[in-house]
Image (tube, rainbow, N blue to C red; front, top):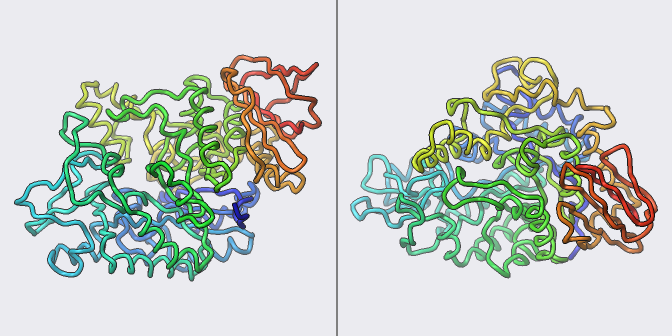
Amino acid sequence: MKKQWWHSKTVYQIYPKSFYDSNGDGIGDLPGVIQKLDYLQYLGVDIIWLSPIYQSPLADQGYDISDYYQIDPRFGTMEDMDHLIQAAKERGMYILMDLVVNHCSDEHQWFKEAMADPEGEYGNFFYLAEKKMGRPCNWRSYFGGSVWEDLPGTEKQYLHMFHKKQPDLNWENPKLREEIYKNINWWLDKGLAGFRIDAIINIKKALPFRDYPADRPDGLCSPDVMLAHAQGIGAFLEEMRDKTFRPHNAFTVGEVFNEKPGELEQFIGDQGYFSTMFDFNEHMIGRSPKGAYADRDVTPEEYKEACFKAQEKIGDLGFYSTLIENHDEPRGVSHFLPAGQVCDAGKKMLAGLYFMLRGLPFIYQGQEIGMENIKFSSIDQVDDISTLAEYDTALAAGLSPKEALEAVGRSSRDNARTPMQWDAGPHAGFTQGTPWLKENPNFLEINVEEQRGRKDSVLEFYRRLIGLRKNKEYQETVVYGSLIPYLREQENLMAYFRKGEGQTLLVMGNFQKDSQRVILPGNTKKVLLNNLETWKEENGLAQMEGWQFVVLEQ
């Protein structure tokens, strides 16, 4: 694996609508991001990924783009974007944008042209079929219901793998691809460092359209079934890489859930389509094909094994991007820690275990202060279209409204989209107006102002993790050292070595509230990180307290 400029960095994801509102309209914006750059510099992050800020009707919170060349006025102006890129550069930071090119908005000019003339040039920018022929296939949208929707004012229907206001773009059309590449290069020429690439595995469809066995009473099948049959995505991804990313030496991280066996090197090897891709193995645990209402909790042993198997799979061929949460997931501490046992020590332990894995760590806004899931009392409080669809699925399965809300609320994307908790003032210091989404009431206890500078806070622990990654004495081992599991069979203990040239670090987390004894492999030279005040080690044995996390130099 060739060493790259981004390997030693730490990435911070901003969901702009919920980060910081500078003008009191209840919506976060680019000037708000600029105002908080000094905070991000204090935290120690190097790369900032912005969720979509392009012009959009926000049917799916910006992942439905109506103009790829414009900033949505809700978030600011192109001048604000230029200012952000420059201000970040002055602080040694890099800016990533979201690249959303599997679909656009039904309010995009391309789609309007397709509606006006389905047989014309822009009709072939989308997947269109004759209504009178019936649905070409029984695929289910990610947000529920058929992927086929009538094209208004025509005798056609169009394909949408996501929301009906997100028509899929036809990547089989070379003219469409060239328009996409032109836009990518336009942004990279402006000074972007690269992109996080949304839902990219979906750009290749299994053609011709066909039905697959239904997996629910609705007669439809999961989109994952189609993706398993799709072949030839590499030709598209190679072309995009060679015409855009490679000439700019751009950093790219792919949102890839469904690569096929043996494809990992093609995606993120030295000559891969992308620089890196997310390790979602831990996030797939417990998910039910019936819907979110039937998902089950993740056990510590499952989490540990998912991490280790991913590390073993990738080996030395490239870097995964590691995470515990993002804008599409619930809060990591509420998802991976046992219910009723979420505490600061556990939050720090979870942070340390994923952060010290071999890969590029991503932090999602608020994660660094231990933000938690919100409790919904009514479905009316939910904004997320995916959660609303899952709620309907739960009701159809026979759950009561109360049961359905509780079931889907645990995994709702809105958990991660509540306003960033800056202080204990009105609306958590996010806005002087009325926030677009209700803040979590626990902002009175969990906020940046309360934690900043407090030695034992979650925020300061994240700063120490980032600091260790930057520490020249240990950086080579932390970034490039091999990862070898230790005491893998010991229940609720996640431990592994990071081995570098003449240096060995032992990373350990006690993934339970009760203490346990751990046999050490040798004498400890130095305790580099400890989320508790004490460390008990004697005669080759350590007594790890509940949720204790340590990094030891061996």
